[in-house]
Length: 457
Ligand SMILES: Cc1cc2nc3c(=O)[nH]c(=O)nc-3n(C[C@H](O)[C@H](O)[C@H](O)COP(=O)(O)OP(=O)(O)OC[C@H]3O[C@@H](n4cnc5c(N)ncnc54)[C@H](O)[C@@H]3O)c2cc1C
Image 1 (cartoon, rainbow, N blue to C red):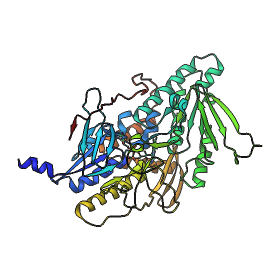
Image 2 (tube, rainbow, N blue to C red; image 1 turned 180 degrees about the horizontal axis):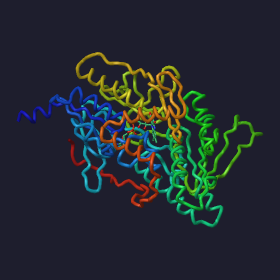
Image 3 (cartoon, protein in one colour; image 1 turned 90 degrees about the vertical axis):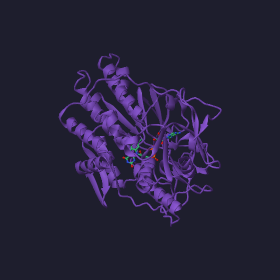
Image 4 (tube, rainbow, N blue to C red; image 1 turned 60 degrees about the vertical axis):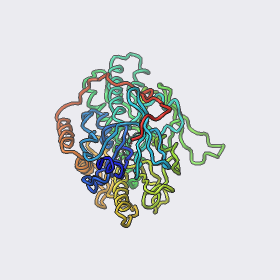
C-alpha cells in the first residue's frame, strides 16, 4: 500500500529524445536525483542508443566500425527508465506523451510532471520530392551504412563498365551542403575512394569526382573566413570540386540539376545559369528541420522549432523545457537562431537540467548564455580546421585536436578504445571494400496508427 502511494506521489521527469541534448540533460538529472525515491526519470526515444554524429562520415567511409559510434542508452543513463518508442504527440494540457503502437507493441501514454523536449531534427529536402526519393542522406547510422555500400557498389559497377558516359556517372559523387556534415562527408568520401581505388585496376585517380554544392558564398558557415578559405583551398587541391552560390533544383536518380544563384534574381537581364551533373549518387546534407512531432505540437513554434524563453522553458507551459536542434533560441548578439550543433545542444541540456532542479527545489533559475569552446571540422587526408582556445589552427594539428577532443567526448571507455583502435588500424591497412547487402532504404515506417491508446502509465 505504502509503495503504491509513493509511486503515485513520485514526480515524473520525462525526457524526449536520446540524442546529445536528451542524454546530457538526463545524466545531469541522474547526478542530482538518481538516488531520490520521490523523483522518477524517464526517457523515451526511437533508438535505444546515442549516435555520435561527428563520426558518422567516418562510418560511411569505412574507417570506423558501425557500432563503435553508438552508445546504448541503458549503459549511459543507468538510473533512468527507458522506453524505446516513437512519440506520436505531446499533450501539454493533460501532461501526457503518447507513443505510436507498433505491429506487436501496444500504444501507450506516459504521464509527466516535468518534460524535456529534445527531439532533434531530420533531413530537410525543402519540398523537393524527387531529391527526397533518390538522394542518400547522412543523419542516421542506417544512412552511413547505406552510403558506404553505395560507394563500393559504384566502384564495382564502374570497374567493368564500357560505356564512358555511364562509367563517369558511376564515379561522380555529389554532396549537397557545405556545412559540417557535407564537408566532412566529402573529405571522408574522397579518402575512401582513393584508398579503395587500388583494388580496381581500370579506375584511375582522375576518374573520381566529388562535387560539393553549397548555396552560400562560403563553406562551413560559423568558421571565420580565413579558416573556411583554407578548408576550401585544401579540398580543391585534392580535386574536390566545390561550387558555391549554387543550389540543387532536382535529382531524378541520374542527373543533378543545379542553378547558379545570381546576385540579383529580380533582374530580368541576368539569366540563371543552369547546369546538369550526371551522377547516380547525390548525398543530401543541405539542411535539417524539426521532426513532425514538434511541428504538429501545441507548442508555439518558429520555423518548426519550439520557442523557448531565456531559461529554455516553453512559452505557456511552465515545467516544460525544449533544448537542442528542436528549440528556437536566438543568439542575442546576432539575433539569429543558434546553428544546430551538438555543442549547443549539450550546453542547453545542462541549463535545462539545472533549471528543472531549481524548479523542484524552489531555487533560482539560470539564464542560458552560450560561450563557444571553439569549433572544429576535419576535411580529409589528415587535415582540418579549428578555433580552439582562441587560436585559429589549420592542417594536421587541427585534425589531431579534432581527434583528441571528439575521442574524449565519447561517453564510454569501451567505445573510446574501439574508435581509437579503428583509427590506428586505418593507419596501417587499406579500407575494407566488402559490400554488405544487409540493409535496405527505409521506405515506410513500421509504426502503425492506433486510434485508441491502450494504456496510461
Ligand atoms: C553527419 C553529421 C555530422 C555532425 N558533426 C557535428 C560536429 O562535428 N559538431 C557538432 O557540434 N555538431 C555536429 N553535428 C550536429 C549534431 O549532431 C546535432 O546538432 C545534435 O545531434 C543535436 O542534438 P539533439 O539532441 O538536439 O538532437 P539529436 O541528436 O538528433 O537527437 C534527437 C533524438 O530524438 C529522437 N527522436 C526524434 N523524433 C522522435 C520521435 N518522434 N519519437 C521518439 N524519438 C524521437 C531521435 O531518435 C534522437 O535520438 C553533426 C550532424 C551530422 C548529421
